[in-house]
Image (cartoon, rainbow, N blue to C red; front, side):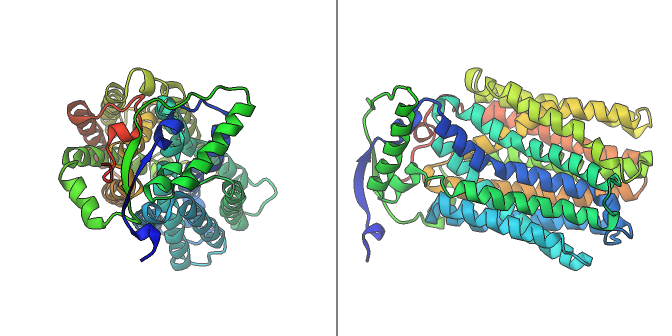
Length: 479
């Protein structure tokens, strides 16, 4: 039996040292390297939504309407599998190994998507693209929260999640240019779109090679000397920038190290001691997943079916949503650290749900045009994007260190299965009926889920603003 498989007691101040670090250029570099996972996902979602029209044409793959929505479902199914598989490995093998593997998986699969010749190969590539992205969620969110000081964790986490919408904006503009006949034949332009996404992923992979392993994960696995070296190097870099390092003053954290946490123990914690938190995470994830996947995977189809937009103009319909969804967390994010998690999450979920409910009636009765509908969703997304980002922040904060990545994976997977996989399938059928009223009923369901999530947050939400991760949720291995 090797040393790491043996349990032993240690005392460490690694968490306090990480939380007391002043914001620095080092943190900016880390966020740049890691936060791109959300940007890539936004690029993927928007590209497929924007390119749905051409993929259905002879210039694309001659896909049917159900095949377009099925491809979206396959992508999300891959994301679910990737989150669970890679999420478990992230807690067991480390954050760094997995965020390199998951990004490489995404990049290769996306490039292969550009080479698709039929629906089956396209769907196969979409599954593995989702596999990489799903793994990214677990690996990246756990790593980011463990590397960022507690006093700004909410602000930074919401900003990182908001980069999804930067990707969505880039995807909308790229699709518009590629489909606008700017010197590129339409039968190859959509291939270039996917190729760009894959190439971007490979470029980011090089940046991540310099990102260190999470010191919190290292201490948990008994590698306290490695953890100290990582934090020492960070502190040295911060000092060079002229900022002061505050010496630890709190009592050291006492842990019993071990090489992994059994799944039986993880699920016992989720369904036992942290059962209420599990229900909260599920409600938040399902609500935001259903809403965003329902709209982003189908809005282009709605514009084409009910408002007769051309394929070339469809990409720009998603652009205002993406811009508003990025600005929301950027402008509101600081409030999640100052006003607090609980009031802000309750407010953003509740307001977004009520606004969505208001849109249903005029759309169902033909009282609103595409421009008016776009304005309404732009306002809704400004609020709802902060709510969605806060869902990932919440799940990352409220579960112990040993199971953080897997907890993110589990609730992301459940939320995606119910909201992400179910929503595109449901709305694909609703749009196919040609009835605006039926589509409005689907939106009404999304509004109910968002309002229910707001109620759950107000009832059993956990206030984690400004607190260390270990105080919000005590490690399973603490002594």
